[in-house]
Length: 184
Image (cartoon, rainbow, N blue to C red; front, side):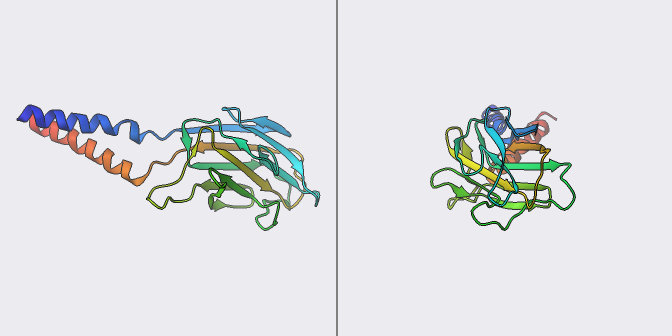
């Protein structure tokens, strides 16, 4: 009986391991065009008002996500932004926005400032967060309120696990504790 309990606890521990990985990919860019480490293109253009727009894949375009298995978080920080120029969150049509998936759902923007922005996907009706999967359509635009000629940035794609995964992790940790206690 004790061996069965240990086996169940060990299986709970093993089951929790892949679920607690937090894949985060940091990358940087500079200039007027490039791609992230997965081949998702980005470009810099000028809108009709003459302001700089950074877009992935480009202003007014959509593309197919080719990143790691999935992501539900994106962060970008622009460096050496000229004085008086900042991210503009108010322009209709050229809005600073991230959309993905079926129907191109708008992602939530919980972190935003003059030179940085962070997005996470919207909550699902069934709990947890939607996520951007390989092959999903997406786009992102960041519009500035002026001219930003020397665009330089740091960015990251990330996956923040759903709360249920933490329960599995805690079960695995409890299994380790139980195994250690049963041996002493």
